[in-house]
Structures are given as C-alpha cells and as structure tokens.
Image (cartoon, rainbow, N blue to C red; front, side):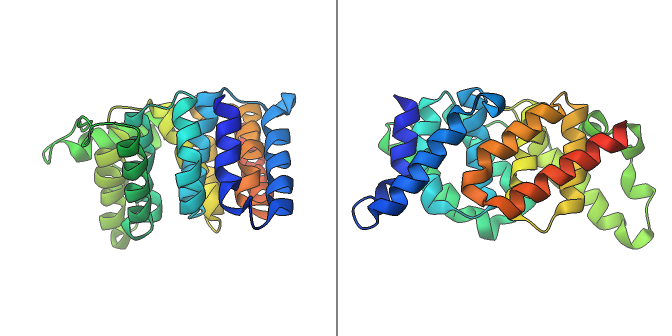
Length: 245
C-alpha cells in the first residue's frame, strides 16, 4: 500500500536506533494523512510533499519519501518538474543534491534517464512567454513589469519574467495551477519569504486553488516543516484571501 510505504520510508532510518521517535513521528504522519477535514488526493499530496521537502532542505526525507510519492501517482516527469522548478525559488546550490537523489531513486526503479525534454520556449521568446505566464497568474498588472518599476530593479524583474517564468513555468509536465501550488510549498517550507508567500497564495487563489485547499496543503505538510512555518503559511493564506474580499 503506497500510504504505508511512504510512512515507513521516512522513519526507516531511525526505526532501529530511535524506535520511540519513529513511532511518534509515524503515528502523527498517519493521523495527519487521515484527518478528514484536510485530506488531499494522494497524487496532489505527493506533489506538495516533494516540493515541501525541497523547500526545507530535507534531502534524506525526500529520498525516503520518493517511492511512496511515485506509487501515489506522481509520474517521473512530474516529479522532475517539481525538482527543476525549485531552482527558481531555492537556487541550484540547494537543489542540486535533490537532483541526484531523484535520479538515484528513478534509476533504481528502472526508469530510463534522461527523461523526455519538456521545454517549450527558445532564447527568442522566453521573455514574452514567461511574462504571459505571469499575466495569466497575477493579472494584467504584470504585463512588461520590468518596464514599470524602479530602473534599478529592471534587470531582476526582466529575469523573473524570462528565467523564473519563461524557463520553468512554461514547461510541460505540470499545469500552471500545479506550478503555483508547488511554488507555494517551496516558499512555505523555506520560511523567511512571507511577502512572496502571500503573493503566491494570491496566485493560487487566482488559479482556483481556494483557501480551504491551501489550508489542507499546509496541514498535510506540517509534519515535515513544523508548526512555526506552518502557522506563518496559514497567516499568508488568510492575508491573500482577505485582500481579495
């Protein structure tokens, strides 16, 4: 059963030497997973857990959870897109170990690497297509945003459109709503990004990921990131929802 495999996986490394901790963690993870008010479809939960473990730099837990995540219906391509997109929000310095962990697990399961390419942009159109993704998520106010702000921010705002959105958000493998969802999870898990987290909570609301759904996401990821970051994330969801009222 995928549920039990995932639960066993994250605790397997401490089950022999620290059975009490493994028991406490395992029981609570199962309680969270089964809590009816905040349950998620298993594939959706898998996407969120993968992104959350990237955000909090839990590479050992990430490796342990991947078999259960894949068994829950997340495809290798979808998993790879979660890892690739994290580069935008965490930087390659923090994502590179997860690329290796992912590829080790996929190879052990007999998946042929490299996976099929998912890029849809070129050097000529990545800025335009990336900016369109920004507009689709956040509205017309993002149109050519690098031309509207302070001149000293023009370069980074252009990179946000061309690189963050153009190189990653336009890729295949995940829908735009799913990409906003995993971004929310990266930001919630790494902490210290509350302004960006509130903005992307709003982006999720725009994409149809409503407040109750985002609350469920935070609850399901709480065992991996703890209470302070989870409560901060809920506050950001509340702020984004209030701004729309």
